[in-house]
Image (cartoon, rainbow, N blue to C red; front, side):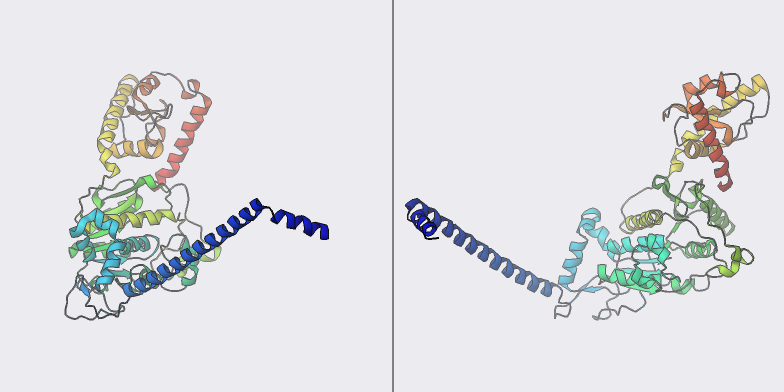
Length: 474
């Protein structure tokens, strides 16, 4: 032990070791001082930020609120529970207004001062607070709409959570409109949100749609109630946009916005269009719909105990009993599409939705070419004339063949022609090819199976089987 201590002593007697030790100690002291100073500065900045934030959120200050729309008869903010109308006051202090403008900075950059003033001064009514309506209302609020009335009679269930914009497990059992209002208070506490837990009907329409709304969003999934709402808006010159069926759909590229008179290839849109015509309404109702055929999934079957008296198991009289399979993202897309269209209308921002029906000229050309091919066949072989129309050609091209040649997958210079010459020309015997492929196919004799690879024949026959299923929902 003595020898060890003697060696250590000799080491530290070395001048170089002493200098090195001094340098290390000085560095450690310097680093500690720097770290301590930086920590003190951070703590000081944190305290300052907290004080500034407290000042920004001091809503009880003596600063007079800024006026943001509505009738200024009183300087007291309207209570959160009051009925919301076009003229409901929205009062903000300068600090609150600064926060809101920062929250909406990207929209101010998009719409400009005038457009955002129109958005913030608007009053919107959303009827239906489910998968579609909750997303529409949510995005309108996030985008600056400060007066919103939400109407729905239903409550949050566990099965709602796959598509509702705001509901959580903690909200199960409470009204959907209440869940939305609670969530909205966290996003935009200055907004005036009226939650109406009511079932819309023709009888209470004057009350539920009172207050001079700039826009009404129809997110109802019951046909009779939907028609009552659309008829009331049309007859009272209230701007309205309606959501058609998002259930049993899965292709986002098929979602469209169009006037109800321009919709096609959607069973619900067709039903609404026909029934509105019976009420004297030909057009003027914008809709969000999908041209996708809902043939891939089916309504869930009734339980044996429900089949005898199915009406006894509906939520309300005349409401559906069977459950519609829903991919949660599709209602959200419908709702966001509705919200986007309404925002651009409120801000006077020019948009012109391009519906798929704009391809009508292509369908006319396909129809004319198919008619010529069938006429030549009829002259050579006899038989009935073509029974298909332009809409059938569009249906075959888009829905059955997805705008591609069945042989090559090409998308240019397409044509429709008969697949098997000895079968009638119908949508389940009409194949999409390029013009050159169609010309060669028309010159073939015998059965197509004798001329094409078995994989190609199997693919085409599978598509024809799918068409037979889809034809039931056309």
